[in-house]
Every structure is written in C-alpha cells, then in structure tokens.
Length: 277
Image (cartoon, rainbow, N blue to C red):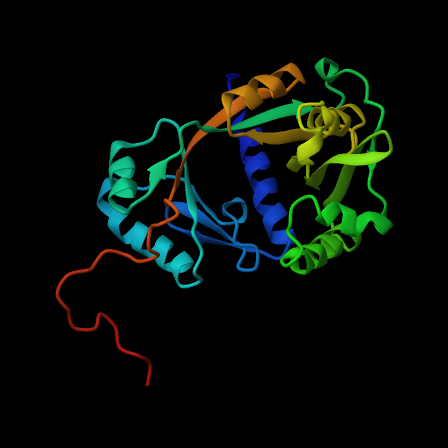
C-alpha cells in the first residue's frame, strides 16, 4: 500500500460523503465520527459511520448516540474503522452484535490520464439524458427505482456549484452491459456504483468503465480519482488499472437476524434534563 497523502485521502472521503448528500442524504458530525445517512436509500452503501477516533472512556456514549440515530430510522448502518482498529472499539462493536467483514474496505487513488490505465476503451461513453431510466435500472429493482431515479436526475442535471455527476455506460454488441457513476467534488472524482448485468459478468465491462473514467478524464483535467475495493481480488485488478491503495478500513455490520435495539441501560434513573418552560 502506498504511503498515503492525508489531504488526498481526506478529499476522497469528503467526495464520497458529498455523493451521498447530493443524492438526497445527509451527514451528521458527532464527537469521534461522521454519520452518513440516507433515509430513502436504506442500503449500507448510503448509511455508514465513518469513525474518526473514539476514546475508550467515551465509547459507550458514542455507540448509544450513533446507533440511536440509525435505529430511530429503522436503518442498519455499517461502522467503518481505519486499520489498525483499537481493541476497545472492536470489543465494543462485537458486544453490540456487529461483526467484521472478512476482507477490508480499501480506498484507492489514481490521477487523471494515469498511464497504467492505457487509452480510453472503445464501447464506453457518458450516458445521455434520455437514458436515465436505463442508468437507474443497473442498481435498483422496479419498486424502489422511482426514488433513486429522481435523486439521480436532480444530481445529474441540476448540480450544485463545484460538483458534477457523469453516468457511464459500457456496451457489447450494442447492448448496455456495465455502468458506473463518476461524481466530482472539488479536486477529486469518485467512481461509484460500478455494476454489470449478470449475463455479461467476467467480460471486462466493469474494468472498461473504470479505465474510461481515468483515461478520458471524465471528471476534468488535473483531477484525482478515487474508488473503493471490498475484496483483495478487486484491489489487485484496480492496481493493474493504475490505482494505488492508500487507506484500509474494517467494516462492521449487523447480521441479517440482529434486532435494531440497544442493550438495556439498567434500572431507571431520574431525568438528566428539564424541558424549557
């Protein structure tokens, strides 16, 4: 793993948060973490706790506050903790029912036009406005598609100053097989939601959209690109495309059968505050 540039890493993580925000989510900062939340898109990809540093003596209050935020909304968050994970955080999360995923989540970076990516591949292009429904279909089932489609439409066609969203499509024999969303915020463009239709998997469509994003400088000149890998196989593939690993996280998630509830707090105590008169 390359020696990380702290400013580049911070910019990539900020771009990811802004990607969730521009799709209609929000982020709440509390002592020790940022709670990224999207109430209408309940997937863990849009609902995660980015841990920034929680002391042993403050972790109980931290976990209660963070989990209460999500559980009130019937959301199952993941906790993203930088490697190495402090022992007290690992113990605390496991006590609450969270389990570490088998492989770390890895943040990778590459510069625009990076030589290792090679020329922009043929068969990939930015999506057209008329293809909004096609783009949305790569990530959502029909029942949940209207919400995502609306959020995508607003972010794509009505961006805020300093941001840009470019959906990409890869084709095989005129059939759309892969897609990705390139979102630029300031000096960093994140490549998110890379997806391939099941019948076309293993044919290079996903790699093509990633290569196109950097080789064609989709986010603009002198832009740094970020992408996440959740497996060692994907990490190696992205490194072959010119990316370098800069930060690792352990992701903790709740098993499917876990209840959205905090452990009992103990016997009742008097109120700690009085409502205003």
